[in-house]
Length: 450
Image (cartoon, rainbow, N blue to C red; front, side, top):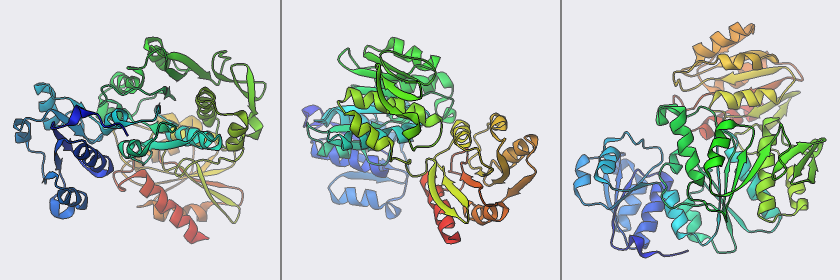
Protein backbone atom coordinates (compact mmCIF):
# COMPACT_ATOMS: atom_id res chain seq x y z
CA UNK A 1 0.00 0.00 0.00
CA UNK A 2 1.01 3.62 -0.39
CA UNK A 3 2.06 5.34 2.83
CA UNK A 4 1.35 9.04 2.29
CA UNK A 5 2.69 11.44 4.94
CA UNK A 6 -0.60 13.36 4.74
CA UNK A 7 -1.72 11.92 8.07
CA UNK A 8 1.59 11.95 9.94
CA UNK A 9 1.11 13.64 13.35
CA UNK A 10 -2.31 14.90 12.25
CA UNK A 11 -5.13 14.86 14.82
CA UNK A 12 -7.97 12.77 13.38
CA UNK A 13 -11.37 11.97 14.88
CA UNK A 14 -13.00 8.71 13.75
CA UNK A 15 -16.71 9.11 14.40
CA UNK A 16 -18.71 5.90 14.65
CA UNK A 17 -17.24 2.44 14.55
CA UNK A 18 -18.64 -0.72 12.95
CA UNK A 19 -16.26 -2.42 10.50
CA UNK A 20 -15.39 0.71 8.52
CA UNK A 21 -14.57 2.75 11.62
CA UNK A 22 -12.31 0.05 13.05
CA UNK A 23 -10.45 -0.30 9.74
CA UNK A 24 -10.06 3.47 9.35
CA UNK A 25 -8.80 3.84 12.93
CA UNK A 26 -6.16 1.12 12.57
CA UNK A 27 -5.03 2.46 9.19
CA UNK A 28 -4.70 6.05 10.40
CA UNK A 29 -2.84 4.86 13.49
CA UNK A 30 -0.42 2.94 11.27
CA UNK A 31 0.08 6.05 9.10
CA UNK A 32 1.17 8.05 12.13
CA UNK A 33 -1.98 10.04 12.90
CA UNK A 34 -3.05 10.90 16.45
CA UNK A 35 -6.38 9.07 16.38
CA UNK A 36 -9.36 9.57 18.67
CA UNK A 37 -12.34 7.25 18.25
CA UNK A 38 -15.82 8.36 19.31
CA UNK A 39 -18.71 5.88 19.33
CA UNK A 40 -22.18 6.10 20.88
CA UNK A 41 -22.18 2.56 22.24
CA UNK A 42 -20.86 2.36 25.84
CA UNK A 43 -17.35 0.97 26.18
CA UNK A 44 -18.56 -1.98 28.28
CA UNK A 45 -20.79 -3.09 25.36
CA UNK A 46 -18.29 -2.21 22.64
CA UNK A 47 -15.70 -4.92 21.89
CA UNK A 48 -14.48 -3.03 18.81
CA UNK A 49 -13.66 0.04 20.91
CA UNK A 50 -12.03 -2.13 23.57
CA UNK A 51 -9.81 -3.66 20.90
CA UNK A 52 -8.72 -0.24 19.64
CA UNK A 53 -7.99 0.86 23.20
CA UNK A 54 -5.63 -2.11 23.52
CA UNK A 55 -3.85 -0.87 20.39
CA UNK A 56 -3.09 2.42 22.13
CA UNK A 57 -5.81 4.41 20.36
CA UNK A 58 -7.77 6.96 22.39
CA UNK A 59 -11.43 5.97 22.69
CA UNK A 60 -14.44 8.02 23.88
CA UNK A 61 -17.70 6.08 24.12
CA UNK A 62 -21.32 6.57 25.17
CA UNK A 63 -22.09 9.88 23.44
CA UNK A 64 -20.94 12.33 20.73
CA UNK A 65 -19.87 15.29 22.95
CA UNK A 66 -19.70 18.63 21.12
CA UNK A 67 -16.64 19.54 23.20
CA UNK A 68 -14.63 17.23 20.92
CA UNK A 69 -14.63 20.05 18.36
CA UNK A 70 -12.46 22.10 20.73
CA UNK A 71 -9.63 19.54 20.63
CA UNK A 72 -8.09 20.78 17.39
CA UNK A 73 -8.93 17.94 15.06
CA UNK A 74 -7.74 18.49 11.48
CA UNK A 75 -9.88 15.74 9.93
CA UNK A 76 -12.99 13.72 10.76
CA UNK A 77 -13.60 10.29 9.26
CA UNK A 78 -17.22 9.40 9.92
CA UNK A 79 -19.33 6.30 9.61
CA UNK A 80 -21.42 6.70 6.42
CA UNK A 81 -24.67 6.17 8.33
CA UNK A 82 -24.15 9.22 10.57
CA UNK A 83 -26.11 12.05 8.92
CA UNK A 84 -24.67 15.48 8.24
CA UNK A 85 -27.40 16.86 10.51
CA UNK A 86 -25.54 15.35 13.47
CA UNK A 87 -24.53 18.34 15.67
CA UNK A 88 -20.90 17.21 15.77
CA UNK A 89 -20.73 17.03 11.97
CA UNK A 90 -22.55 20.34 11.56
CA UNK A 91 -20.09 21.95 13.95
CA UNK A 92 -17.11 20.48 12.10
CA UNK A 93 -18.39 21.77 8.77
CA UNK A 94 -18.86 25.26 10.26
CA UNK A 95 -15.27 25.16 11.54
CA UNK A 96 -13.99 24.09 8.12
CA UNK A 97 -12.81 20.66 9.31
CA UNK A 98 -12.84 18.17 6.40
CA UNK A 99 -15.32 15.31 6.88
CA UNK A 100 -14.52 12.11 4.99
CA UNK A 101 -15.76 8.54 4.82
CA UNK A 102 -13.22 5.73 4.85
CA UNK A 103 -13.43 5.13 1.06
CA UNK A 104 -11.37 8.32 0.70
CA UNK A 105 -8.67 6.72 2.83
CA UNK A 106 -8.85 3.59 0.68
CA UNK A 107 -8.21 5.62 -2.46
CA UNK A 108 -5.27 7.48 -0.97
CA UNK A 109 -3.38 4.34 0.02
CA UNK A 110 -4.36 1.98 -2.80
CA UNK A 111 -1.70 0.71 -5.19
CA UNK A 112 -4.50 -0.80 -7.29
CA UNK A 113 -6.86 1.04 -9.66
CA UNK A 114 -10.49 1.21 -8.56
CA UNK A 115 -13.70 0.39 -10.41
CA UNK A 116 -16.44 2.29 -8.54
CA UNK A 117 -20.08 1.17 -8.77
CA UNK A 118 -23.06 3.14 -7.50
CA UNK A 119 -26.75 3.64 -8.29
CA UNK A 120 -30.10 3.00 -6.65
CA UNK A 121 -30.62 -0.63 -7.65
CA UNK A 122 -28.34 -3.34 -9.00
CA UNK A 123 -25.12 -2.22 -7.29
CA UNK A 124 -24.38 -5.45 -5.47
CA UNK A 125 -25.33 -7.74 -8.35
CA UNK A 126 -23.26 -5.70 -10.80
CA UNK A 127 -20.29 -5.45 -8.43
CA UNK A 128 -20.34 -9.20 -7.94
CA UNK A 129 -20.72 -9.90 -11.66
CA UNK A 130 -17.78 -7.65 -12.53
CA UNK A 131 -15.63 -9.32 -9.89
CA UNK A 132 -16.58 -12.81 -11.11
CA UNK A 133 -15.83 -11.98 -14.77
CA UNK A 134 -12.49 -10.33 -14.01
CA UNK A 135 -11.55 -13.30 -11.84
CA UNK A 136 -12.53 -15.74 -14.60
CA UNK A 137 -10.37 -13.68 -16.98
CA UNK A 138 -7.37 -13.93 -14.65
CA UNK A 139 -7.24 -10.18 -13.98
CA UNK A 140 -6.71 -10.36 -10.18
CA UNK A 141 -9.76 -8.45 -8.89
CA UNK A 142 -10.53 -7.68 -5.26
CA UNK A 143 -14.03 -6.79 -4.04
CA UNK A 144 -14.77 -4.05 -1.52
CA UNK A 145 -16.99 -1.25 -0.26
CA UNK A 146 -20.66 -1.28 0.61
CA UNK A 147 -20.84 -4.98 -0.26
CA UNK A 148 -19.46 -6.09 3.11
CA UNK A 149 -15.66 -5.89 2.79
CA UNK A 150 -14.28 -2.63 4.11
CA UNK A 151 -12.62 -0.62 1.32
CA UNK A 152 -9.67 0.63 3.34
CA UNK A 153 -8.93 -2.85 4.62
CA UNK A 154 -8.89 -4.24 1.07
CA UNK A 155 -6.76 -1.33 -0.15
CA UNK A 156 -4.16 -2.10 2.52
CA UNK A 157 -3.63 -5.53 0.93
CA UNK A 158 -4.01 -4.55 -2.75
CA UNK A 159 -1.06 -4.73 -5.14
CA UNK A 160 -0.52 -2.83 -8.37
CA UNK A 161 -1.58 -5.85 -10.46
CA UNK A 162 -4.95 -6.02 -8.65
CA UNK A 163 -8.12 -4.10 -9.46
CA UNK A 164 -10.48 -3.16 -6.62
CA UNK A 165 -14.14 -3.55 -7.60
CA UNK A 166 -15.87 -1.25 -5.10
CA UNK A 167 -19.58 -0.84 -4.39
CA UNK A 168 -20.30 2.69 -3.17
CA UNK A 169 -23.37 4.13 -1.46
CA UNK A 170 -24.53 7.73 -1.67
CA UNK A 171 -23.61 8.05 2.02
CA UNK A 172 -20.01 7.05 1.30
CA UNK A 173 -19.72 9.28 -1.77
CA UNK A 174 -20.76 12.37 0.19
CA UNK A 175 -17.52 12.01 2.15
CA UNK A 176 -14.92 11.97 -0.63
CA UNK A 177 -12.30 14.55 -1.52
CA UNK A 178 -9.75 13.31 -4.08
CA UNK A 179 -11.33 9.86 -4.65
CA UNK A 180 -11.13 8.98 -8.35
CA UNK A 181 -12.02 5.58 -9.80
CA UNK A 182 -10.41 4.51 -13.07
CA UNK A 183 -13.85 3.32 -14.17
CA UNK A 184 -17.03 4.71 -12.58
CA UNK A 185 -20.55 3.37 -13.02
CA UNK A 186 -24.03 4.66 -12.19
CA UNK A 187 -26.50 1.83 -12.71
CA UNK A 188 -29.70 3.91 -12.35
CA UNK A 189 -31.23 6.61 -10.17
CA UNK A 190 -34.61 6.50 -8.44
CA UNK A 191 -35.94 8.12 -5.29
CA UNK A 192 -34.30 6.49 -2.28
CA UNK A 193 -32.85 7.44 1.11
CA UNK A 194 -34.75 10.73 1.06
CA UNK A 195 -34.94 10.57 4.85
CA UNK A 196 -31.15 11.03 4.78
CA UNK A 197 -30.66 13.30 1.78
CA UNK A 198 -33.82 15.41 2.04
CA UNK A 199 -34.78 15.38 -1.64
CA UNK A 200 -34.08 13.58 -4.91
CA UNK A 201 -31.77 16.29 -6.25
CA UNK A 202 -29.50 16.03 -3.22
CA UNK A 203 -29.48 12.24 -3.54
CA UNK A 204 -28.47 12.49 -7.22
CA UNK A 205 -25.80 15.05 -6.36
CA UNK A 206 -24.32 12.60 -3.87
CA UNK A 207 -24.29 9.84 -6.49
CA UNK A 208 -22.66 12.14 -9.05
CA UNK A 209 -19.62 12.48 -6.77
CA UNK A 210 -18.37 9.19 -8.21
CA UNK A 211 -17.25 10.95 -11.40
CA UNK A 212 -16.44 14.44 -10.11
CA UNK A 213 -12.65 13.91 -10.02
CA UNK A 214 -12.37 11.79 -13.16
CA UNK A 215 -10.33 13.01 -16.12
CA UNK A 216 -10.20 12.18 -19.84
CA UNK A 217 -8.01 9.15 -19.10
CA UNK A 218 -10.82 7.58 -17.01
CA UNK A 219 -14.15 6.01 -18.04
CA UNK A 220 -17.68 6.81 -16.91
CA UNK A 221 -20.12 3.99 -17.70
CA UNK A 222 -23.71 5.17 -17.40
CA UNK A 223 -27.36 4.30 -18.01
CA UNK A 224 -28.31 6.06 -21.24
CA UNK A 225 -32.00 5.28 -20.68
CA UNK A 226 -32.30 7.73 -17.78
CA UNK A 227 -32.25 11.49 -18.32
CA UNK A 228 -31.02 12.18 -14.78
CA UNK A 229 -28.00 9.92 -15.30
CA UNK A 230 -27.40 11.49 -18.71
CA UNK A 231 -27.29 14.91 -17.02
CA UNK A 232 -24.48 13.67 -14.79
CA UNK A 233 -22.67 12.17 -17.79
CA UNK A 234 -22.78 15.48 -19.65
CA UNK A 235 -20.90 17.12 -16.77
CA UNK A 236 -18.28 14.38 -16.47
CA UNK A 237 -14.74 14.89 -17.81
CA UNK A 238 -14.24 11.13 -18.28
CA UNK A 239 -14.57 9.17 -21.51
CA UNK A 240 -18.27 8.30 -21.71
CA UNK A 241 -19.42 4.70 -22.23
CA UNK A 242 -23.22 4.33 -22.29
CA UNK A 243 -25.38 1.24 -21.94
CA UNK A 244 -29.03 0.85 -22.91
CA UNK A 245 -31.75 -1.79 -22.99
CA UNK A 246 -33.90 0.34 -25.34
CA UNK A 247 -31.59 1.73 -28.02
CA UNK A 248 -28.38 1.01 -29.89
CA UNK A 249 -25.56 3.01 -28.32
CA UNK A 250 -22.67 2.42 -30.69
CA UNK A 251 -19.92 3.36 -28.23
CA UNK A 252 -21.28 1.18 -25.45
CA UNK A 253 -23.31 -1.90 -24.51
CA UNK A 254 -26.80 -2.62 -25.84
CA UNK A 255 -29.26 -5.31 -26.94
CA UNK A 256 -29.74 -6.25 -30.58
CA UNK A 257 -31.34 -9.26 -32.29
CA UNK A 258 -31.63 -11.16 -29.03
CA UNK A 259 -28.00 -10.65 -28.06
CA UNK A 260 -25.86 -8.52 -25.75
CA UNK A 261 -23.59 -6.30 -27.83
CA UNK A 262 -20.58 -4.11 -27.07
CA UNK A 263 -19.38 -1.61 -29.67
CA UNK A 264 -20.74 -3.70 -32.53
CA UNK A 265 -19.43 -7.02 -31.20
CA UNK A 266 -21.81 -9.81 -30.18
CA UNK A 267 -20.96 -10.99 -26.66
CA UNK A 268 -23.69 -13.50 -25.71
CA UNK A 269 -27.25 -14.50 -26.62
CA UNK A 270 -29.77 -13.27 -24.07
CA UNK A 271 -31.30 -16.75 -23.93
CA UNK A 272 -28.02 -18.18 -22.64
CA UNK A 273 -28.00 -15.89 -19.56
CA UNK A 274 -29.29 -17.65 -16.44
CA UNK A 275 -29.75 -14.63 -14.12
CA UNK A 276 -33.53 -14.01 -13.93
CA UNK A 277 -35.33 -10.71 -14.40
CA UNK A 278 -35.46 -8.08 -17.14
CA UNK A 279 -33.98 -5.54 -14.76
CA UNK A 280 -30.83 -7.65 -14.57
CA UNK A 281 -30.17 -6.95 -18.25
CA UNK A 282 -29.13 -3.44 -17.17
CA UNK A 283 -26.68 -4.96 -14.70
CA UNK A 284 -25.36 -7.33 -17.37
CA UNK A 285 -24.86 -4.56 -19.93
CA UNK A 286 -22.98 -2.46 -17.39
CA UNK A 287 -20.87 -5.48 -16.46
CA UNK A 288 -20.02 -6.24 -20.07
CA UNK A 289 -19.01 -2.63 -20.76
CA UNK A 290 -16.72 -2.43 -17.73
CA UNK A 291 -15.16 -5.86 -18.19
CA UNK A 292 -14.43 -5.21 -21.86
CA UNK A 293 -12.82 -1.87 -20.96
CA UNK A 294 -10.75 -3.73 -18.37
CA UNK A 295 -9.56 -6.28 -20.94
CA UNK A 296 -11.66 -9.33 -20.09
CA UNK A 297 -12.14 -11.83 -22.92
CA UNK A 298 -15.55 -12.88 -24.19
CA UNK A 299 -15.02 -16.43 -22.97
CA UNK A 300 -14.76 -15.25 -19.36
CA UNK A 301 -17.87 -13.10 -19.76
CA UNK A 302 -19.87 -16.00 -21.22
CA UNK A 303 -18.64 -18.42 -18.56
CA UNK A 304 -19.97 -16.21 -15.77
CA UNK A 305 -23.23 -15.15 -17.44
CA UNK A 306 -24.18 -18.76 -18.25
CA UNK A 307 -23.66 -19.89 -14.64
CA UNK A 308 -24.23 -16.90 -12.33
CA UNK A 309 -27.62 -17.19 -10.59
CA UNK A 310 -27.45 -14.11 -8.38
CA UNK A 311 -26.09 -13.08 -5.00
CA UNK A 312 -27.47 -13.62 -1.53
CA UNK A 313 -30.64 -11.66 -0.77
CA UNK A 314 -31.05 -10.47 -4.40
CA UNK A 315 -33.63 -12.71 -6.08
CA UNK A 316 -31.72 -15.62 -4.56
CA UNK A 317 -33.27 -19.01 -5.33
CA UNK A 318 -33.48 -20.95 -2.05
CA UNK A 319 -35.29 -24.24 -2.64
CA UNK A 320 -38.05 -26.12 -4.40
CA UNK A 321 -40.33 -27.48 -1.69
CA UNK A 322 -43.07 -29.78 -2.99
CA UNK A 323 -43.16 -27.85 -6.26
CA UNK A 324 -43.10 -24.39 -4.64
CA UNK A 325 -40.05 -22.26 -5.51
CA UNK A 326 -38.80 -19.98 -2.73
CA UNK A 327 -36.85 -16.79 -3.55
CA UNK A 328 -35.06 -14.48 -1.09
CA UNK A 329 -35.06 -10.86 -2.27
CA UNK A 330 -34.56 -9.25 1.13
CA UNK A 331 -32.31 -6.60 -0.48
CA UNK A 332 -35.48 -5.14 -2.04
CA UNK A 333 -35.59 -2.24 0.41
CA UNK A 334 -37.56 0.05 -1.93
CA UNK A 335 -40.59 -0.19 -4.19
CA UNK A 336 -38.67 -0.26 -7.47
CA UNK A 337 -36.65 -3.30 -6.40
CA UNK A 338 -39.85 -5.17 -5.54
CA UNK A 339 -41.44 -4.15 -8.86
CA UNK A 340 -38.40 -5.58 -10.65
CA UNK A 341 -38.58 -8.79 -8.64
CA UNK A 342 -42.28 -9.28 -9.40
CA UNK A 343 -41.60 -8.68 -13.10
CA UNK A 344 -39.15 -11.60 -13.11
CA UNK A 345 -41.98 -14.12 -12.57
CA UNK A 346 -45.11 -15.05 -14.53
CA UNK A 347 -46.36 -17.94 -12.38
CA UNK A 348 -48.75 -17.44 -9.43
CA UNK A 349 -46.81 -15.72 -6.68
CA UNK A 350 -47.21 -15.30 -2.94
CA UNK A 351 -45.51 -12.06 -1.89
CA UNK A 352 -44.03 -11.45 1.56
CA UNK A 353 -43.63 -7.70 2.12
CA UNK A 354 -43.33 -5.04 4.81
CA UNK A 355 -40.85 -3.33 7.09
CA UNK A 356 -39.75 0.16 8.08
CA UNK A 357 -42.26 2.93 7.40
CA UNK A 358 -40.51 5.89 5.72
CA UNK A 359 -43.75 7.76 5.17
CA UNK A 360 -44.34 6.69 1.56
CA UNK A 361 -47.29 4.80 0.10
CA UNK A 362 -47.11 1.70 -2.12
CA UNK A 363 -49.62 2.41 -4.91
CA UNK A 364 -46.83 2.03 -7.50
CA UNK A 365 -46.95 -1.70 -6.82
CA UNK A 366 -50.54 -2.14 -8.00
CA UNK A 367 -49.80 -2.65 -11.74
CA UNK A 368 -47.15 -5.25 -10.83
CA UNK A 369 -49.43 -7.49 -8.78
CA UNK A 370 -51.26 -9.29 -11.62
CA UNK A 371 -49.65 -12.64 -10.85
CA UNK A 372 -49.80 -12.26 -7.06
CA UNK A 373 -52.41 -14.58 -5.56
CA UNK A 374 -51.74 -13.73 -1.91
CA UNK A 375 -49.82 -11.19 0.15
CA UNK A 376 -48.40 -11.76 3.61
CA UNK A 377 -47.42 -8.59 5.45
CA UNK A 378 -45.28 -7.77 8.49
CA UNK A 379 -43.66 -4.75 10.11
CA UNK A 380 -44.68 -1.09 10.33
CA UNK A 381 -45.90 -0.82 6.74
CA UNK A 382 -48.25 -3.81 6.91
CA UNK A 383 -51.47 -1.72 6.86
CA UNK A 384 -50.30 0.34 3.86
CA UNK A 385 -49.38 -2.74 1.84
CA UNK A 386 -52.67 -4.42 2.76
CA UNK A 387 -54.59 -1.40 1.45
CA UNK A 388 -52.76 -1.61 -1.85
CA UNK A 389 -53.35 -5.37 -2.06
CA UNK A 390 -57.10 -4.85 -1.64
CA UNK A 391 -57.13 -2.17 -4.34
CA UNK A 392 -55.29 -4.59 -6.64
CA UNK A 393 -58.09 -7.14 -6.12
CA UNK A 394 -56.05 -9.61 -4.08
CA UNK A 395 -58.45 -11.44 -1.79
CA UNK A 396 -55.96 -13.45 0.28
CA UNK A 397 -54.14 -11.06 2.65
CA UNK A 398 -52.54 -12.25 5.88
CA UNK A 399 -50.61 -10.31 8.52
CA UNK A 400 -47.94 -11.93 10.67
CA UNK A 401 -45.53 -10.61 13.26
CA UNK A 402 -42.28 -11.78 11.71
CA UNK A 403 -40.69 -13.09 8.51
CA UNK A 404 -40.14 -16.42 10.25
CA UNK A 405 -43.90 -16.76 10.81
CA UNK A 406 -44.62 -15.74 7.21
CA UNK A 407 -42.89 -18.75 5.64
CA UNK A 408 -45.16 -21.58 6.87
CA UNK A 409 -48.22 -19.38 6.33
CA UNK A 410 -47.15 -18.80 2.70
CA UNK A 411 -46.53 -22.50 2.20
CA UNK A 412 -50.00 -23.29 3.56
CA UNK A 413 -51.57 -20.90 1.05
CA UNK A 414 -49.56 -22.16 -1.91
CA UNK A 415 -50.02 -24.83 -4.54
CA UNK A 416 -47.59 -26.76 -6.69
CA UNK A 417 -46.07 -24.46 -9.31
CA UNK A 418 -46.33 -21.33 -7.18
CA UNK A 419 -43.50 -18.93 -6.39
CA UNK A 420 -43.06 -17.73 -2.80
CA UNK A 421 -41.14 -14.46 -2.86
CA UNK A 422 -39.71 -12.40 0.00
CA UNK A 423 -39.39 -8.93 -1.54
CA UNK A 424 -40.27 -6.49 1.25
CA UNK A 425 -40.19 -3.09 -0.59
CA UNK A 426 -39.02 -1.66 2.74
CA UNK A 427 -35.92 -1.36 4.86
CA UNK A 428 -35.57 -3.85 7.71
CA UNK A 429 -34.69 -1.61 10.63
CA UNK A 430 -38.07 -1.67 12.36
CA UNK A 431 -37.54 -5.36 13.20
CA UNK A 432 -34.12 -6.50 11.97
CA UNK A 433 -30.66 -5.00 12.18
CA UNK A 434 -29.99 -5.44 8.45
CA UNK A 435 -31.69 -6.80 5.33
CA UNK A 436 -29.14 -9.66 5.50
CA UNK A 437 -30.46 -10.71 8.91
CA UNK A 438 -34.02 -10.57 7.57
CA UNK A 439 -33.08 -12.67 4.55
CA UNK A 440 -31.18 -15.23 6.62
CA UNK A 441 -34.22 -15.71 8.86
CA UNK A 442 -36.34 -16.34 5.74
CA UNK A 443 -33.81 -18.87 4.40
CA UNK A 444 -33.65 -20.69 7.73
CA UNK A 445 -37.45 -20.88 7.86
CA UNK A 446 -37.57 -22.35 4.35
CA UNK A 447 -34.99 -24.98 5.26
CA UNK A 448 -37.06 -25.93 8.31
CA UNK A 449 -39.95 -26.63 5.96
CA UNK A 450 -37.74 -29.04 4.07
